[in-house]
Length: 139
Image 1 (cartoon, rainbow, N blue to C red):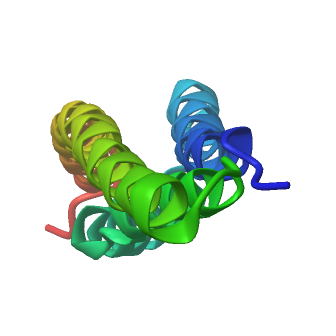
Image 2: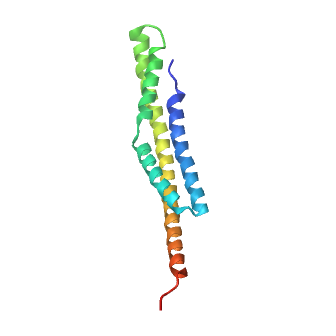
Image 3: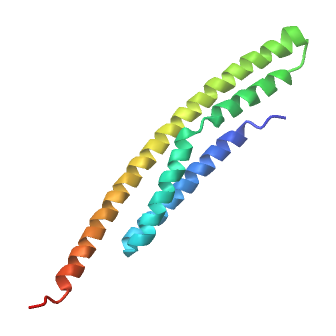
């Protein structure tokens, strides 16, 4: 039997992984661990780029819908084939809806990562200014 929830769970799990990574970045920034935060930001950017380029959720939902149509029973020409086509189209439309929601979430996460990167740059500038001002001057 086709699993309707599997592609949705996979998508939500990947978005959750990225969100947890962003929380770790925020924790590093609060503790002043700038190098660790910078390294994690680069990793999150790569994950977000791979998420934004994927469209397999819509395709998976199309296949699931077509499988459900084929399993519907009845005559092949009057029942299963039209049901497979209709359910496949419905799965594609539902997958596209999920995909647009995922893209919106990825855009929001990318904006938050950019904000964190700005925070990181400001903290790095402050720490470099404080280290140069605290160094003894040679006269």
